[in-house]
Length: 234
Picture (cartoon, rainbow, N blue to C red):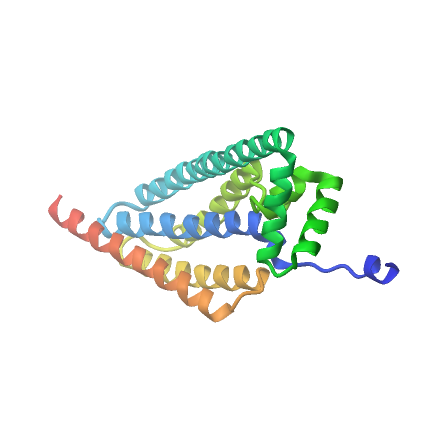
């Protein structure tokens, strides 16, 4: 036991909650703000108008990301709470059936009948609801929904991501130079984000970099094209 207590493992799945929100927020901040700036710049607006549009996009996007993440993850939390409440009631009304149900889960995982029944008995004796939450409902402390954490993480990372193409736009002249500068800088930022996210989650780096860079470049190309069409027709 002393050896086990001194040996601590850090699994990447423990980061999945905040990492997903962080990558989503930063990626969306870069892509949406860069696309907005490129689209407005392609319409031959003044630099002040482009920057104003970018700042408005940053603020609106950060608030939208925070609200969207909070509502979405809160819905998940409500569903988890409802499932746990139903499981708690079933444990009180028919514990024998719940025991058989848990034992059946362990048999499907490879245990024989006797061992599965013993495991179910011992786990339910310690914490029946926790055992059913983990093994029947797949709800653990790692996957539990955290709405506030998701909302805060998304808002902060969106703002950080959006500030990068804004800075590139501020440092460049309006028109084609701004389109090129923001596009190139944003693809680089996206590649770095993909690499950092992959390294943090211990995932393949090259695949993540190519994925985020490709879709970011595609989004900016589409909005630049639309901006040119709108600018030419106005």
